[in-house]
Amino acid sequence: MTLDPPPRRSSSRRYVVMIVLVALLVGGWSAFWYVAAGKAREMLDGWRAREAQAGRIFACGAEDFGGFPFRFEFRCGDASAQIKNSRIPFELRTKGVTLVSQVYDPTLLIGEYQGPLTVSAPGGPAEMTVNWKLFQSSLRGTPSRPERLSLVFERPAFDVLEAGNARPVLRAEHLELHGRLAEGMVTSKPVVEVAMRTRGAFAPGVKALSVQPVDAVADMVLRGLNDFTPKPWPERFREIAANGGKIDVTEARVVQGETLAVGSGTLTVSKAGRLQGELRLTVAGLEPFLKSIDAQNLVQSAPSMDKLANALDRFSPGLGQAAKQQVGANLSAGINMLGQQTTLEGRQAVSLPLRVDEGRVYLGPIPLGETPPLF
Image 1 (cartoon, rainbow, N blue to C red):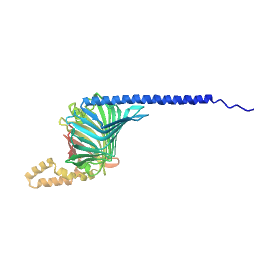
Image 2 (cartoon, one colour; image 1 turned 30 degrees about the horizontal axis):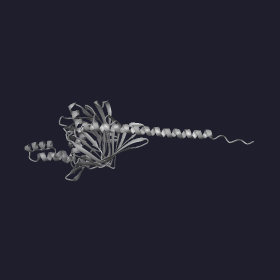
Image 3 (cartoon, rainbow, N blue to C red; image 1 turned 45 degrees about the vertical axis):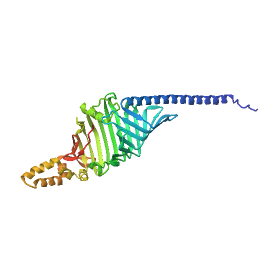
Image 4 (tube, rainbow, N blue to C red; image 1 turned 180 degrees about the vertical axis):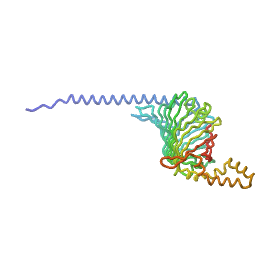
């Protein structure tokens, strides 16, 4: 008995239906993507228009919008930003910016930047340059209502340009900066958490940071802001000072060679725009650090030490100089006596204050330098 082959009409219909469904799905997704892309462009154009009215002008030499089918990608060549509403207007320029957002998560915006970045007066020559191997940003929220922002640099190099020559300010193998809204609202009394991570950082112009590279971690909370709308950081620090705000350093950890320091404390901003306050540090391997910054000479040349030496010389010529030499020679032992003996990660350590007085930084009696004004 011979069986007839099954009819193929039903199978053919299934294939046709599948092809039609796939075509409808592709066509529907394409229509959705292009409509959503148009909305994204409208939002971007609206944001730039609002920023321009506020004195912040963002422009591109060339623009391109793509990313079909699963993301939105905005490419801006020869990007520039003019900030005119600052006390000191300035302009930023870089070769290119690429911003990417996934279709399924439009409130997460990833950015990648082509260096170098130049900073100048509007229309003027570059006064500072920043270059990097890789620079990426991550923004959760929207540009006008950010919830969390992260900046990540690989091998950043910050230089100040003086008479056409570059003077190194900061170098690092890795640098991260993170900001998150912890309390309040973006538009009213926000409390902002800030975190910094760096590896292999050194600053040629700062003695304490120029001898050996530094690995550091710092977590802070900023209180006293009026809002977190886009504005220059000097204006934010001015708000903190005017509102009696503060900078809570919840955790700080620094490793430099044999020296390990951890600490926490609170800083404020004075009416003159200078940091002041105190951190309580616990330091292991203090003596190598003191030698690296030539702490003996720093103490011996301090204005307070000169006043003491002059007073002693009135009683007996040469007594002041002898006292200065003795103070320098016994500096490490004296600090260990002044501080509280403890242990840190299994090592002998001493606990002592890091004081900041109108921007001047002291580790116990040792002047370390001066922080720049915040506004």
